[in-house]
Image 1 (cartoon, rainbow, N blue to C red):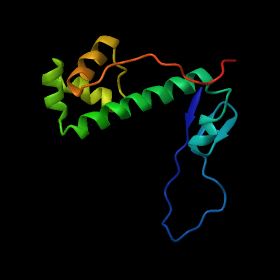
Image 2 (image 1 turned 90 degrees about the horizontal axis):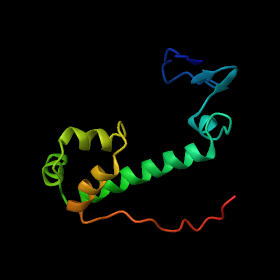
Image 3 (image 1 turned 45 degrees about the vertical axis):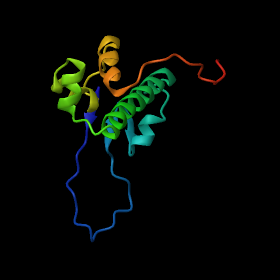
Length: 122
């Protein structure tokens, strides 16, 4: 069960010593994103790794598109997909299918590769 707690903002001249509760999940109160991100009971190592991979992948796609000076509309036309699909992908509202990813990467001059991760396995 999730419960979101909102607090009315105070003017900046007031200094608040106690932490502001951002979110309460069950009986645990989280005050920062890091509290939630580092809680292994809430987010497993596998989930954290997947999220980090997706953020990195989307970041690289945006970086590649912008470095070539290509708009979302132009990339969509070159990849044969809709601009709204590029926008959803770049805003992380959607995770791309592999075939869509290849369509987007091709006009940017990139491809996918599987490489060793150089981290010891458990």
